[in-house]
Image 1 (cartoon, helix red, strand yellow):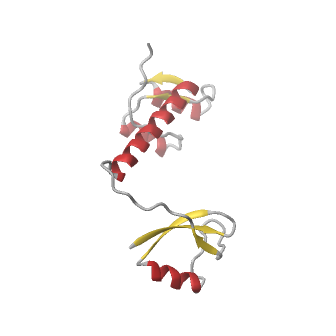
Image 2: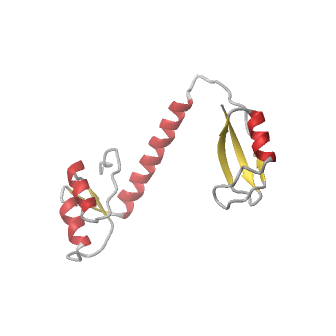
Image 3: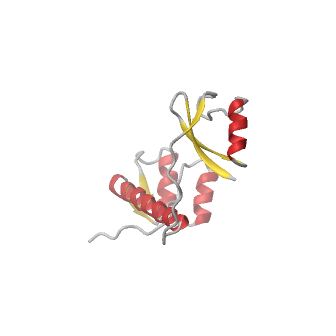
Length: 135
C-alpha cells in the first residue's frame, strides 16, 4: 500500500491510499479519482517528501502534536471562559434552561454527569488534562 498526497484543479489537498503506483495511474486515467471537497476529477499528485527514519517515531511525533494542541485548547478555554469548578453540571443546566446568564464556562464533571448533560441536549465537551494552577 502507498499513500499519495493529491491536489484537485481547485487546489484542495487530500490523501488517498493505493495498492501501488500503477493502481493510482489506472484510476487517474479512468477519471475515478474525485476530490472529496468539490467532486473535481482533475487530480494530480502533490509534491511529497520521502519518509526518513529517525530516532523519533511518527507515533511519538503525533502524540506530542496532539498534546500540544490539547494544552493550547485548554489555555484558550481558561483565558476566555468562567471557571465554575465542580458546580459545572448544575451551572451548565442553569444556562441551558435560561435560569442563568448565557456565558462560556468550564469546570469539572464526571463522565456520567457529562453524559447526562449531553442526553439533556446541553452542549458539553470533555477536554483531557489538568486545569492550569493559578500562581
